[in-house]
Length: 195
Image (cartoon, rainbow, N blue to C red; front, side, top):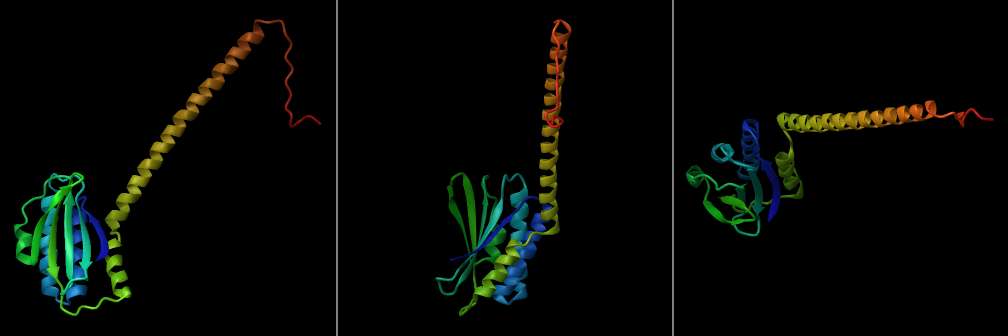
């Protein structure tokens, strides 16, 4: 088994990206643009169904090369029960609901690949790169989340600094009050200026 990667489904843009990635992968594996378009469309529709009310849906992609003919397996997973697989049934050779595990529900859709398919290491690396490549929207989401995290850290540190300044001001006021009320002489010196 060759694990190609995972595609997270978070919004409409991620559904479009999933469709494009499945299209590229299946075109590379089947050399048949019609089959690739059908699988990509079925995957896209399943993702749309998943995105409605789903918690953390994603698709795992694997090539099972220990069987003949080899197969491409797409595993749709979410924490919620998955929708109907009617559309997947029409375009994939096998579709099965997997037993729930650790609160995850899953459906695996399998497409047989051409007999005698030989995948070189460079082919596998290319397919993994297609799945792992982040879209502009995914990169912008990551950047936005990082920025929000930084803004929160700045706000926390600013609040910490304000509290520290207030403690210093309060301490200085207590010292000033103590000195004004006593008949003591206080001499201070900056150690860096002493010679």
